[in-house]
Length: 259
Image (tube, rainbow, N blue to C red; front, side, top):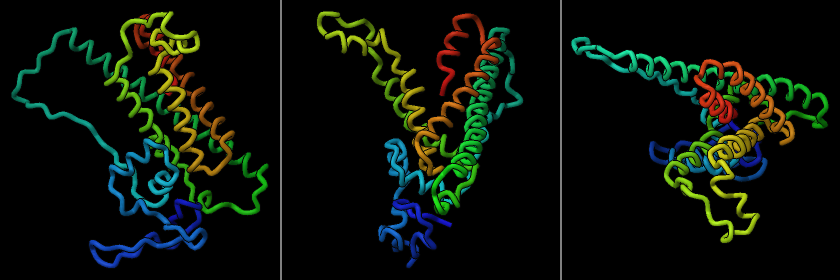
């Protein structure tokens, strides 16, 4: 059953279709607002609101669209008549690329598995110690299959900021210590890793916000869930780092192991 994106109450219908190009949005009986205005918005608006971490777009995509996640299979077509020769270096590069992608997939699976397991434990504890007399509509419609989809939607904010960092690169040289006070010198490019902050701090905050919307629990519990996912992913990173490469590559791998 769909829900209202404003108050998370269950509604019978989101809109009424009058004709092919004409529809009328239904009002929520609880808050008298439109149940889901996103049904008439385009994909670009949904993407922008996802980057801005708006609560309503999460509820629309997770509870009101009802579409299964699209699974893409990437592949390449090779002409059998074309010569297929490769040097030993190219073969090694291909093997290293496949091995690296495999390790990344293992870490991602570990993070999602840790988050799912933590969600199962936290929801059980929250339901036992909670003081709510009844279960909310959004919790009644909750399914654990929504967790990976929520983490994917939450990662769009992190990916957008990382894309901006590829366009506006940090300055190559450090600034003069006399030009800025000591407090602002802490934010120099040589002392702060913006990519690490985007990946860890902002990525963790956006993932916690998405879980807060879909689980309808206190932010303290979502913080515990994200930390549990980080612990699981870091443990797998420590395990697979021995097969990444040399010492420098291993240190770089561990530095960016947290999502």
